[in-house]
Length: 286
Length: 324
Image 1: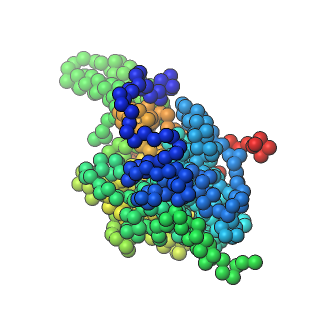
Image 2: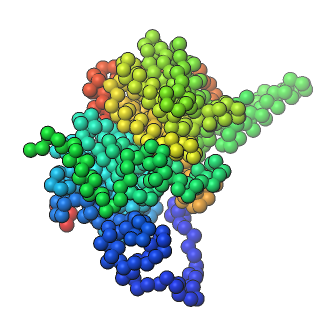
Image 3: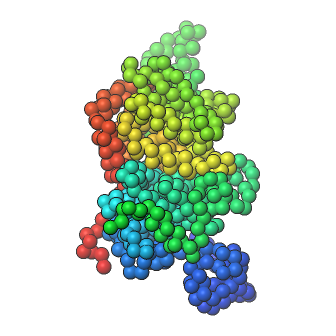
């Protein structure tokens, strides 16, 4: 019975366009920028850290690619990969969706955590992956973040988190909401012990994630153009009955409104993070 | 007059009928006392049947009842010498959150809570109990003050959510809520939170990180409103009833998930039937909690709060050998 409730109305017929779309390019060789619509060689794009060379659009990247961009080669050691989501609300289709996303994203949850080095300085790093359930935060995401923070506390090293999330994971209901408290309380303890917290908000960082750990860095950074905010644009427009400006809730908007320390281009990310970490290791290095 | 709710209709109808019969007995010279007695017995059974089997959607309606007691109502009954304090010292005073100092059984405490309006005019002033960042920042200011002067903090939660508006975003709604969650983790005084109506998502949690969290029997606590869930799940907000049933948002659900420490019983039919009586029930729970927490040292209070939240979550942990 419950299944009936959740089943989506499936379309009976597929519509097939008569003429093939003009921008068709062989899959893989060329990539079109969704922002400026210009096409470029995928190889070239990859060499440019997945940033459009024409308009600087930052393509969303997965957690593994991100780790490769930021950490010293071969230094990453994953933590807590053994944690997997349950289905606490017996949500129809939830388990299947998780399995599908594991294949799609190449990661087993919406976050990957571990230790690694940036220019030979050890850090604990957590990277969210928006390809997995829109990076939404359920029990596993919360638990992995908490454990990563505790690890950083134990090792006395900086904690760096890259956020990319639509917010709390609805399929886990109020348990997801409570992960906001769990992660924030863990950061507080780490902070009280003198721990360094760096957050980098990437596209998108909204809802419960933006209203918890993402905003709690000693330094809050963001990638250019990233969507960052608490409530969804549509909800706000419906509430205030007003059309919002295009740049509303972008990283640039947040910088202007005093919510960010800086916006960092992806190509400079490692260098800047390295500098921040270095500036905090004065006198503490062996 | 207490406004009736949909599921109460059979009770109201029966009550009306009994009333009519009584009127007839008074006016005309017929004795209907046996019929009245029968109906009154039936009314009693019916009330028990309905009020003891409240469904999630019924509770949502009670939680949102326009006459449901608010933070200030409970403050009146539970505390002496409440002194309201205003403003976040940065931007303004958000009346969607009230706070101040008061005496509880002679002991100084800090009280904070979401505040809905009683009528349209007051609701506009209080933004229907949906705070802006300055509301959370006022709450934080008062909590820091409580921490400094070693006063317990008591929070009443009752909001549909943090206000989803343009100005709220511009002033950092996310940061304001996040900051409260963070700081509430570190206070060295007891924090007791009571969900008295709607616990709407991050906007509720923003003053809801405590050593003890209680929910009134007919209150709800959820990551998204039933309407919001329905519009995402089935693209249809009118399916809210279904969503309420599947999202596990009642006090019993939260108790089972280990999120809250206890359920505070309500007077029959809901708190709005008798605020005074309801306050007495809350009072006994609050007093006991405060006494228990007063045995903990400052470090233990932080530790206990940390452990409480660290434990929340349902997941599966494979043996390390199972990972390829």
